[in-house]
Structure formats: C-alpha cells, structure tokens
Image (cartoon, rainbow, N blue to C red):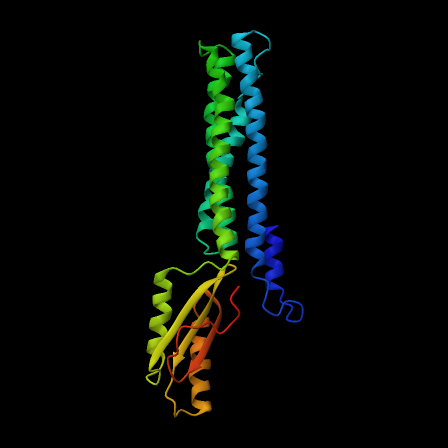
Length: 261
C-alpha cells in the first residue's frame, strides 16, 4: 500500500488533483495502523486461549501441552530475520519521510517481536521437553506473545495519533513558526511589519500563511515582486508544501478573512 501511495503521489494529475495527492500518504499510514492493531488484537485473543489451555492442563489436567519445537531451522531463520530487519530499520530511519518512518517502525517491531519469540520460545520448548523441571514455565510463550502484541498496539496507536493530527491541520511547532517569521523579516527591508504567521499540517508537510505590511505608497508591481519572491523562498523549505503571502499596507484588527469552520 505504501509503495502504491508513493507512486500515486509522484504521478501528478493537475486536472483531477490540482493540489497534489501528498495527503494520500498519511491516509495509507492510518489504514496500515488499523490493520496492524487489528492483527495484534487477534494475536492477543489466540494467545489468551493458549494461556487458558495451559492453565487448565496444570490445574484440571484437561488438555495436553502444545508441542513447541525450537530446532536449528527455526532458530536460524528467526536469528537471520532479526539481523535483516534491524538493518532495514536502520536504513529506513535514515530517510526523512513519513512512509519510510512507518516502514522503519514495522521493521523495528519485527525485530522486537522475533527476539521475544525466540527467547520465550526456547524457554517454553525446554519446559515441554523436561530440560526445565518446572513445566509451568511453558506459559511464558503465550504471555510473551501478549506482551509483544501490546507493545505493537501501543506503537501503532502513537503513529495513528500523529497521522490524524497531520490530516486534521495541527499547528506547526513554535521553532518552525520562528524560522518562518525570521525568514520573512529578513526577506526585504521594505517589509515594515509582519501581521500574522501561520503554519499547520497539510498532510505530511506544512501549509504556511504570512501577512506582511508594506508601505502604502508602494506600486502594485513592487509589492507583487516582494510577495512572490517571499512565497518562493518559503516553499523552498523542505517542510513546506504550499505558502501564501498576503500583502497589506496597515495592521488591521485580528479578524478572520475567511469563513470560520
């Protein structure tokens, strides 16, 4: 899904999507979050059933213990998976991109889950075959699955909250607003004041609005040149997708120019 989203974003269609399709990226990540949380809930459900079955075996002797085999083949595969996923997670984190961040998180979760499964699986297998005398230790296998599933759910819910904020137009951090304000103030000596600076999430990037005050006697051509060049400067920032520069000759009362939603 993420690969398809990246391809769709790069394939511009100015007639059907004049504003671009970058907001498709967080939408896909939201869907991925829901899928991963749902899968983890299913794992918890099955692990609880297995845990109840193990408890019944020791308390009521109603069922047999599961056959847990941790031979050379599964140990090799799981160890190789941990190394490979750790490397992929590191490489993905080097790319400052929401899609790569989600993929890196998925790889990281796989590393943690495989390590836990490997350790708890070995302990449970030794409990079943009698190497560990206390057979009750076998319950660490479903307990480990429950713990790692809860960890995965927590991680993806955090990612889900982040992407919902991005889709909802959440404001930028004060540091970024200060950066935009400083760039605007330094852009031209003819800018007498800055009335308003806004920046909020517009999908994965920011939409920036700046209201600047110019001399009343300035010609339209001069004002347009300053506004257009400032807009281009702001849109050159990697975090900015769109920038709008509004020109005025006086600082007015703080009223909304657009419909308040």
